[in-house]
Length: 114
Image 1 (spheres, one colour):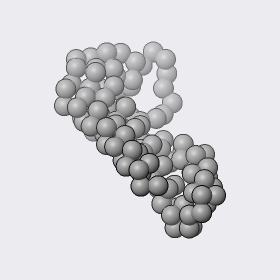
Image 2 (tube, helix red, strand yellow; image 1 turned 30 degrees about the vertical axis):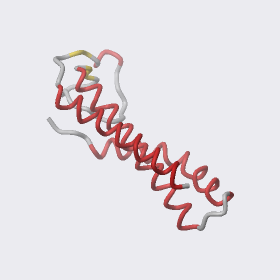
Image 3 (cartoon, one colour; image 1 turned 60 degrees about the horizontal axis):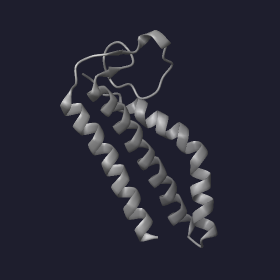
């Protein structure tokens, strides 16, 4: 089974294009430098990537398959009849929950550093 890391990154980048300017502006308003504001935008991308990848992989681990062949695809045009359930895959479930937990921890640490 192949994990579509590029699809996850593309989806995170698509969302970050809209959220990144807000993170940049907020850091600049608080008195941060251009480098620190850029670092905040990179952090937003990284957190979005971890949550999107973790959520998709965790759903696949639960046995929820959205497309054929069975694999977590990130984003993409999906037809309504393509979803089905399969057996639970605990390895992918743990990987997905681990990625989401890593995103949560990184977010909490970044809140404390401010």
